[in-house]
Structure formats: structure tokens, C-alpha cells
Image (tube, rainbow, N blue to C red; front, side):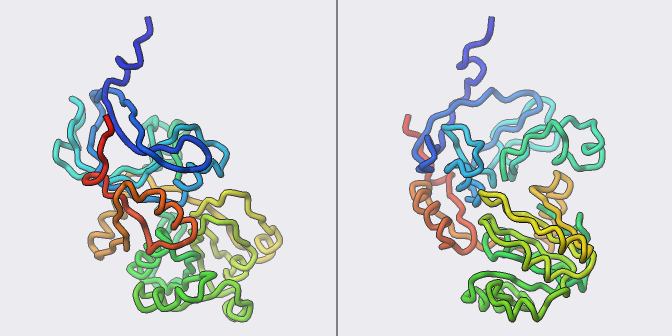
Length: 315
């Protein structure tokens, strides 16, 4: 006889969920399974709001299942561990990303790339710089978009010794990019003269934009063997011009998230070089306003919800 739902998921939990493609979030009760022997249970204290959350609650990728409780940039404190867990203990502070599961035996898992395991589930969206060879000092690297991901990319690249150019549609972000984040130069992507002046000069470009935008101008900035690395996930397919790729011997790649080893290396590197994101901390009842502001680009640079102090169960 199959177990009843309350037997399989006895742990009560609480969050905020979207019920339909309006994307409006409201309080929601849910249940989770009991802590297994290899599980770590933790209390969520903070959660970042990513543009992918906006895509998911509005079903812009056409794969949302409602009700949906968004959020995959999570930090918290361990409250319980299973009997076979060795690395974590109660009271540890932990971060959780958007990967679920892996087989621990395939070629990807054996090479610390469990994020590409066929049995891994990406709940939705990186550390692409080392994998794609952009971590060498002296390289000329562009960063498209100066949002939550883009501003951190600038900080990492500068710490790695790269010459960084921020590429944006917003001229008013130039002062912030150069004076506050330390970028070496700034390009307005709509200014054809500016773009033309730096054609074929960049070793790589990291594109963090999650809205529809043209790729052709970006490919023109790359040297031969240059790499355009896509990190953003727009709601509609982008047009890919093939001739600039084949005639200029340029490469297009993508990255959703790093594996556990890469992610730990990234955290250690950030701690060593004192790299921290610029955030705006908000209470949970501000989340719908924050989503509206995110859609308008009105955030500097990442909203983070203080769930530990503001999320209260309705039950």
C-alpha cells in the first residue's frame, strides 16, 4: 500500500508562491520529506531574487508548474543532519544553489562536473571564467550587463588581473562601472561609433543579460578565437548570425552553474580577495514590488530577502 502524502512529507514548511502566470506571490504552506540519512536540513535565512525567478513565475520559459515557490540563491543555517552526513553539522552556515542530485559515477561526476551529470536536475537558473580560459592576467574581457551577475563578474575579473570593459545600453551606468566597480572602460552598445572603435580587440565576453538582445555587435568585438559566453537566459530565442562565427573563428558557449568543487573555489577566492555582491535587503512582503522593480531594472544590484526575520507562517 502506498504511503499517504502526510507520511511521505511530514515536515511542514512555509513560503511564498505564484499560483499562475500573473507572477503575483502570496503566502503558501507546503510539506517536505523527513530528513534522510544523507540529507541536510537547514533553515533558510536569506534568498536572492534572480531574473530567472521572474521568468519562472510568469512562465516565460513555458515550463513552469504552478503553484511555484521561486528562489534558488539560498543561505541558511543547518538544523538537522542525517546519520551518514560527515561534512556538515548542526549550526553550520550553508549556501544552496539550483542543482539537485547526481549519480556520482558517470564521466562528468568523476571530473568534478556533476553539474553536467545526466541525472542532475537544474531547478533553473557560474563560474565560467576558468573553464573558458578567461582567468589569465592581462586578458581583455567584456561584461555585458551590469546587474546582479554582471557587477560580480567585473569584481572577479579585476581580481584575476583582466582588463575589463563593461558593455551596457545605459550610459548612466558608466560612472558606477568605472569609479565604483573598477572597470577599465565602458561601452554604450547602442553607440555604433564606440562599438566600431574596439572591433576585434576582446579575448572574451561574458553576457549576463536575461532580456532579448542582439549578438552580432558582440561577436564583432571579439578577436579570432575569442569566446562569447552566455550566462543570461532570455525569455525568447536569440538570433545567431553564423558567418561572423565561422569567418572570424569565434566561439559561442554557455554556462548555467559551476559544480561543487568550482563553487567552493569561487567562494574561497571571493573571501581571499574580499569580493562581495552589492545588495538591497528586503522583507518578504516587499517581494512583489521587488519583482516589478527588477523587471524595470530598478535595483542595485541584487535584491536579497531577509526570510529569517520576516517570513512568518500563516498557520
